[in-house]
Amino acid sequence: MKRTFLAIVIASALLTGAPATVLAQAAPASAARAGSPSQLVLTNSTRILSTLESRRAEFTRDRAALSRFVSGEFNNMFDRDYAARLVLGVHGRGAADADVQKFAIALSENLMQRYGSSLLDFNTRLQVRVKSESPLRGGAIMKVSSEMVRQGGEPIPVDYLMHKVGNQWKVFDVMVEGVSFVSTFRSQFDGPLKRKSIAAVAADLQAGRLQAGGSSN
View 1 (spheres, rainbow, N blue to C red):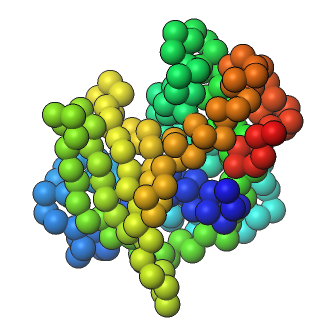
View 2 (view 1 turned 90 degrees about the horizontal axis):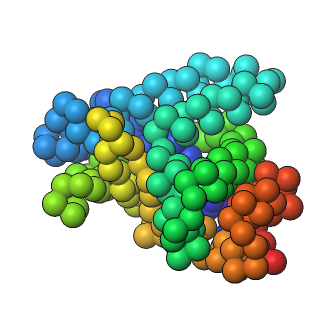
C-alpha cells in the first residue's frame, strides 16, 4: 500500500471528525446529539486539530513529543486490542489475550513510528463533513460516515466503525474510499502469521524486521 494512502488512514483514525462549525453546518441534527459517536468524533478532532496547529513548531523540532502525542491520542480513541483481533482473523481464534495485546501494541507502535510524522504535513484546516450516523447489529456498532473536503480536490469518503468499551465509544476500523484499515492489515499479515506465531510476528514488528504497510515477505 502506498505511503500516502496509509498516512491518510492513520490521520483519519486520529482525527475522526471535523471542527464544530463544519459539523453544525453539514451534519444532520441526529448525528450531532450529545454523547453520540459523531459528537465524540467532533470533540476529539477539535482538540487534536488545534493541538497539531498550535504545537506544529514544537513537534517539528521534537519528534519524540509528536510521537507521545500521536500515540496517546491513538490509544485514547482507537480500540487497538479489538482491532488487532480483527486483523489477526483466523490466526487469532483461541489466541491468548496477552499475545493479542503484544501484537496490538507492536502494530500501533510500528504505525506511529513509521507514519506519525506525516501528521506534520496534514492540513489542519481541512474540512470534514459528518454525513450520517447509522446503527449496526442492533446498535452495538455505530457507523459514522463522513468525507474529507480538500480545496481544489474531490471529497474523500471516510467511514468509522465504533463500539462501546465500557461507557466510551471507540473506533475499531476506518474505511477510506471503501478500503478498510482492518482488512488491509489482515491481508498483509496473513502470510507471516501462517509461518510464525503471533508473538513472533509482534517481535518482528517491534524490531522493524516487518513494517506495517510494507512488504510482508
